[in-house]
Image (cartoon, rainbow, N blue to C red; front, top):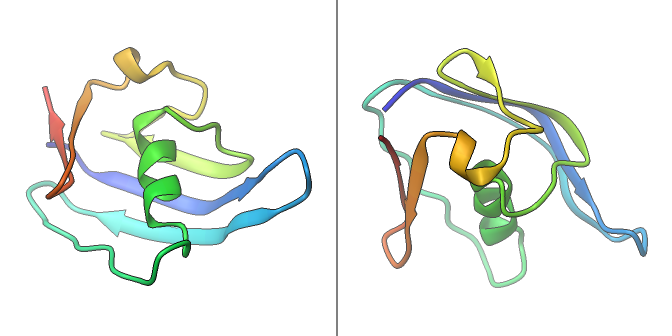
Length: 90
């Protein structure tokens, strides 16, 4: 896997609901992280934005030093495994 950097990532839905309020996170190559929190706190939304399944309203997502905000899911060169959610650089 490559280094992943989230800078001030936000998600605001068209109805104005703010789901993600500005996440900053650095994940080093080979590092494992765990996202925990109550139902509805934004864990899945954040993961879907990383995977490219949800648009990022504001902020920057870098994977391997490349900005990927506008890239389609298949262009991000990662995979998402559910249950124990993992991103794998392919």
